[in-house]
Amino acid sequence: MILDTKSSIDNSIDFSRELSSLLREQGNLHYSQIYKAVELQLKRKQKFNGLNWLDRCILCMNNLSNGHGTKPQNAFYCMLGLVFIFWLILTFDLGFEAGLDFFKSNYLYFIKPWSFLHEIEDNSLSFGSDNMKCDFKWYTLTFEVVYKFLYAYLVYQFIAAFRKFNK
Image 1: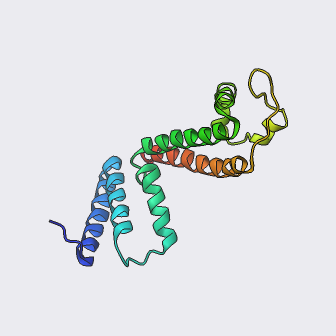
Image 2: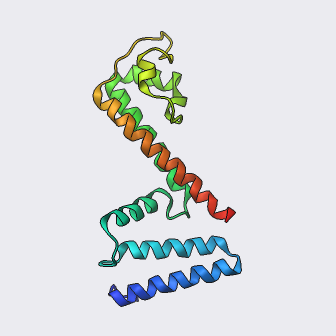
Image 3: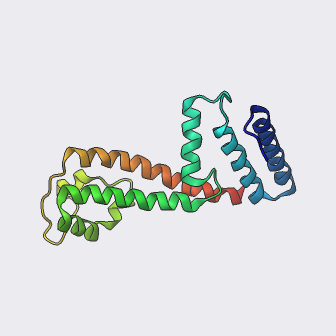
């Protein structure tokens, strides 16, 4: 039984770090990455470990998005969830029928980081079968910027989780 004392967590962190380095020296990169993820998880959970709130936030986001490089499916599921949330916001803004029409005619918009809603407002991209003019509300345009940053971060994390095999 592992106690939640500072010394036992420090010992667990050191043990995970040693296992990770030994496995890396033996050429077993897969398990080395797993023990590195365990080390980072323990470091994040440890109280008074010298990490500031930003480092804790980064470790938490990294764990959520790709399990510290061990679970690329986390980033993929987060991307799908983010696309769904953004589609719900667009549907709330435009109405259900127009939201479905938007998704059918502009489904690539959700995965292209360089296309923005103002291009659709200006009719430089088609919107639906009638090429109708639409005006998006401020909250949709604001969330779009957040969406693009989060989506780019998740794509990076998805790729980073696969890089572990090429080290």
